[in-house]
Length: 133
Image 1 (cartoon, rainbow, N blue to C red):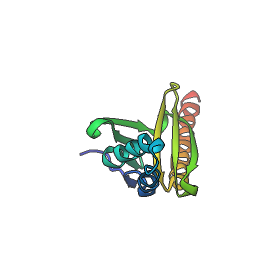
Image 2 (image 1 turned 45 degrees about the vertical axis):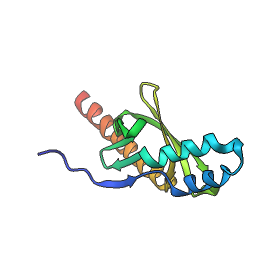
Image 3 (image 1 turned 180 degrees about the vertical axis):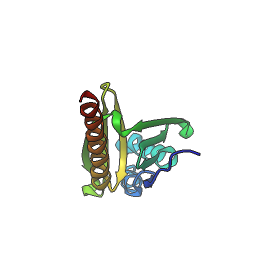
Image 4 (image 1 turned 135 degrees about the vertical axis):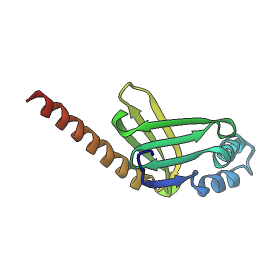
C-alpha cells in the first residue's frame, strides 16, 4: 500500500491559450504558435499533489517528469493571456529546470508549491538540527 497523495490540481493547459493562438493563426506569421498551442492542448498534462509535481508531455504525451518538493529550490511565474493563465518555471537543486506552460490558476499553484517546498525544507532542517544534538 503506497503513501496517499492529495491532488491539488490535475489537468491540461488553459483553453484560452489554444483559443487565442487559433485566432492569431489568421495571420500566417502566428501559425507556428498555433501549432504549439494545439500540441500542448492535446498532450500536455499537469498533476500537482501533496507530494510531487508531475508533468506528462512530449510527443503523444509519452514523456513523464516527476519532482518531489524537496528537490525544488525556486519557483517563478510569468503571467500570460491578460493574467488568466501563465507559465511556471521550477528550478531544481541540481540546477535543472522544468517549465509548465499555459498553466491555469498559476498563482494559486505557485503559492501551493512554495508552501510545500518551505514545509519540506523546514522539516529537513529540523531533522538535521535534531540529529546534531
